Image (cartoon, rainbow, N blue to C red; front, side, top):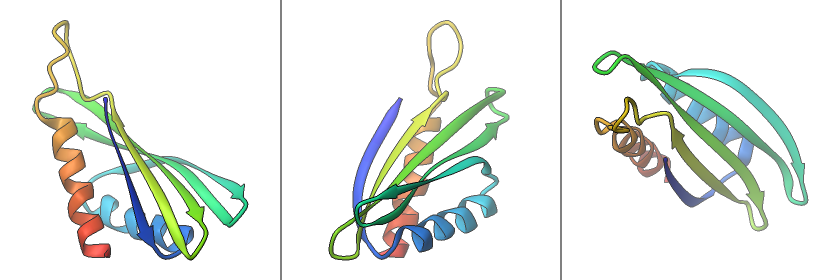
Length: 109
């Protein structure tokens, strides 16, 4: 399992919509989203899944989008299910998903 945390400027809803739009183009399917109320606004917990034919597996990307004060948003990204087989080989899937997210975050900033 790989995880990462970033702080972005903006609001939770716009950031969620940005990720939804760009991940869908990259063949991720959004499986579920929950809206959560926090002190500084509405946040989201959402899960995306992507099928990888090279090892016949599905990996998930969970995003926790949490509004902070001063129009900032904390995004926690967790990749799971990328390790398959008895030896838990990742086949660089987790790294690939995080690389996609790093690119999207860079474009967003």
